[in-house]
Length: 354
Image (tube, rainbow, N blue to C red):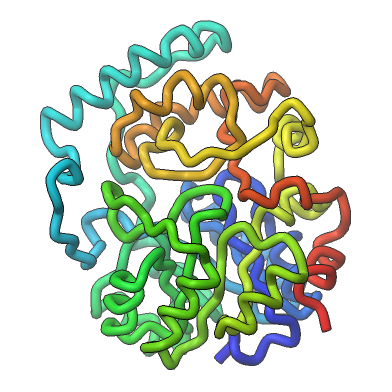
């Protein structure tokens, strides 16, 4: 097992949208950890180029993370009142109403918002073919649990399969599917919560407690994730039963990361004082630095992923291009203040070395 054999119990979190670069992945792996490319939102040819770049830069194992589209997700959740996912015309109307509240921001940045917002367009099947063809050592999945045929194909190719879970119920479902390892994600992490269902309210248990509960019925490696930015926190999780820790936010300011300049500045901005969990940017719950954009729109955002992701993408791109963080999704965990402008290898060593 790759995760069991790591020289340093450190996994570089896959961060979609730009921060995860081949340079960052190679740097984490070369430092003894396991770097991950973020396949979500990338075109298949772009992911292929990034995989080739990692192979060129390092001989160490690495991973690729893929988002599981609704049509391929086998996790079935019994819905309580108020948690039934939006579908059909109701969903379309909710997305349209949210588009209306974004128009003033779009006008400010001089962009057009799409009137017809696509659903899933992440090229799932071709990306699966790619990781099998390229013999990527580890493939992790977020936002869903792939079916038996997908998992069997990866196993035949000698690829280790990891699934992100956010509570014990999800962990049990993934273990029943015979995955090779789990990423157990707590509530303090930056970016999207990896619930296996878009409408689900994720667990609020501290990740230390959650790792302990999952470990009781689990014989595969556990990677603990969520707000880990210090050596003491990593040690606490390893002592609780984690095989390794997954770190994202602490890598955002490293020179190897592809983090936009405005994003880097925001992480060091003393006027941004806290993170919040919001659906405002993608329709999925995610932790970000609190800005006026989030405060004014969080309560209006429906649980409609990936439509809201596509709807807000032009705003986020324009905001980054203008070097103005006000409409950017500034994904950040609760330990964002620990992120520093140092090489990725230094972050690996500081958090999980020795």
